[in-house]
Image (cartoon, rainbow, N blue to C red; front, side, top):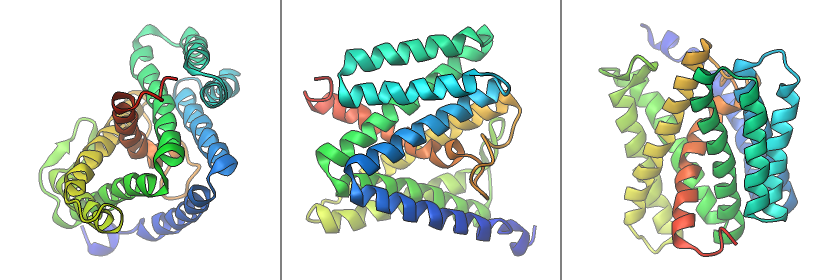
Length: 263
């Protein structure tokens, strides 16, 4: 394969990526209502993509994503019991239209979206802008490092039955770049606490796990992309599956280390 063909989609990916970065940066900096609006909307869109994989022509393509948005807003405005009640109702409505064999992985994906968005909300409002920038930068580093290392070095496949293009070289490249990002952020925010390099690798691992999990979901549905909403990247779930994997780790960490999460 020539260098030109290996990187044929790079320009489109970069242009779409720049737009996403600009919108995301503005959202993160503004915080407050703009942040909540954009990230709840992100949850709604990703939920639509999950539902659409199995139920392409159904009113549930509108109902279930809207209910997911209400579930997250119930957590923000009310409390955990309300949020979990709305989420349970959302999952029941969705599962009512699914075959039993299709329920497991799709329900897990919906729960990951729900918990992941809540984890990001806590990062931005309770820990600070620097923390969410660090997590997102590690996820991006994992993706970028994996893309270039995998395309440049190739080698043994990571899990060909699920994601034929992913290689061990790409996986390790993602870890390395995420560790470097961790070191950079440790210099800026943490008085050069080098443990952030290790944490960066852990975030990269969870991000890659989220990517693989979404690949399993798509393979079972027999499609390549979750949608075509983002040119060069597929759908929002394709672009943010790694973020959801990493933010699930964030949610677990916050849940285990603070008493305020379930207040």
